[in-house]
Image (cartoon, rainbow, N blue to C red; front, side, top):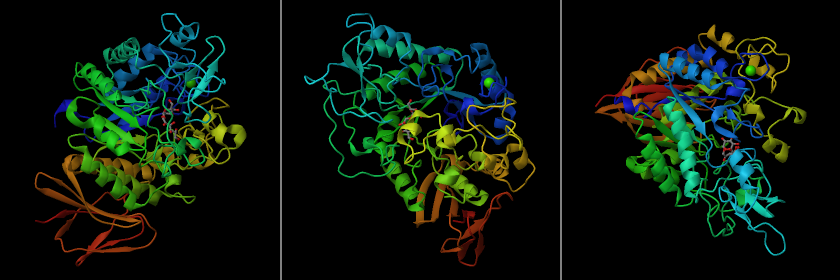
Amino acid sequence: TNNQEWWRGAIIYQVYPRSFFDSNNDGIGDLPGVTAKMDYIASLGVDAIWLSPFFTSPMKDFGYDVSDYCDIDPIFGTLADFDELIQSAHQCGLKVMIDQVLNHSSDQHPWFIESRQSHDNDKANWYVWADAQPDGTVPNNWLSVFGGPAWHWDSRRKQYYLHNFLDSQPDLNFHNPKVVDALLDTVEFWLKKGVDGFRLDTANYYYHDEKLRNNPPKEKVVEGSIGVRLDNPYAYQLHLYDKSRPENITFLKRLRSLLDQYPGSTTVGEVGCDFSLDTMAAYTQGKDKLHMCYSFDLLTHDASMTHIRTTMETIEAGLGDGWPCWAIGNHDVERVATRWGGNHASAAKSKVYMVMQLSLRGSVCLYQGEELGLPEAELEFEQLVDPFGINFWPEFKGRDGCRTPMPWENNKQGGFSKSNETWLPIADSHKLLAVSEQEGNRSSVLHAYRDFLHVRRAHPELIHGDIEFIYDDETTLVFTRNHQGKQLFIALNTSEQDKIIPTELTLSELTLPEAIICGYLDNRTVVLPPFSVFFARIVL
Ligand code: TEU
Ligand code: CA
């Protein structure tokens, strides 16, 4: 394949640096820690790493509140540490993607500090300022994803400013061309440093409606579609005016023309909205906007195979020459082993979900710890640090349970740190699933990931093929991947019951590595034991 198109079908391993490995034993993971574990990442057989933010930040949203886009927070290390990380990754054949949080900055960013000084300073219009209504109330009904109105009163400017997330994360004003230029400069800073691409935080939030029109109420509210839960009032508005504005396309085109000057670089946009599949299509079609997008559609609690099929068929129908990327877990949602596996998360369930994700058409984001089948860590209210979780407790427990440190060894601090205290505790349930424990067990989830990534590499159908669905129900999915006249037949059973799939096709069974639970062919039926998968070549 064309080297510059390495991202098509790539497996992108998401590292959450605070929780990966602590090299200086202050209880928080850091960049030298990622470098120290580069061999492990490479051993998985992934193509790239995506680093969650490590930029200078007051850490109100754990780095998604940036106060200097072109420097490293001292907690994580230095620019020299970053150079070393990139070098080591490239030596291992891994691409490096970084997280760009362009929609908003920290309220401690010099741009915002200046902007809030007066109505006529140089940066006065760099953020979204609006007057109060005559009765002093907020300019309109827009809400923050993290709770409450999206407007915060500034007593010096005597105006409100917009924040789609925390009030310490003011939204930048993309309608101001100077803001766009400044942000593109920061993107170029990292391209020059040799990064291979960007994960674009909240890629559909950049623009707001300049008339500040109210969002209408939503007629039909569906859990999870925009990444927020039903106990959040945000879910009850149709977000027509605060995000996903048509102007966004113009910005994505400018961003793309910058990236095109650095051949082989790529983007994956995070898209959270009510029409996410259409938006993914619009953002990735035509090779002049984003390379890839991912939505929240597979990050919901809906683990049914019918949902998977519907999501895939919808995106395939509208995608054209665009390219999708699928995440079934990240640092914002309950770990998939628990979210889809329920309270009885198990290795068998993790393996079948893994094979499913890696067999769909598209690139893949794989969140650290997923390869260990980690369940959500249980935390007490007192242990929470995520403001989102603290706001919505106890209905929503927040995002700390998926952000606890990686268990490397089965000991006190999980081999993550030598500090007595880590920024979040290491769950006891995770220590038994530590990397060192799983390395020694041929049938572990870790071995299943490695082995299956190998299978995927050996079968171009799984990377480049078309996808066609044959059958689905709540817990069964049967589909084919077709590439250059070759057809792979794939059947999955995510239930604890046996499944029988009758078929008229002539199938030649493929042997899968031993860590994967396999179905088998019996006359004209495919037999799927609990949590098993079946792969065959269709004999034409
Ligand atoms: O997340 C964007 C987003 O929409 C999330 O707020 C999501 O709705 C929520 O977390 C669901 O659980 C991105 C980052 O991934 C997240 O970590 C940041 O907090 C957020 O942007 C603000 O930068
Ligand atoms: Ca550290």
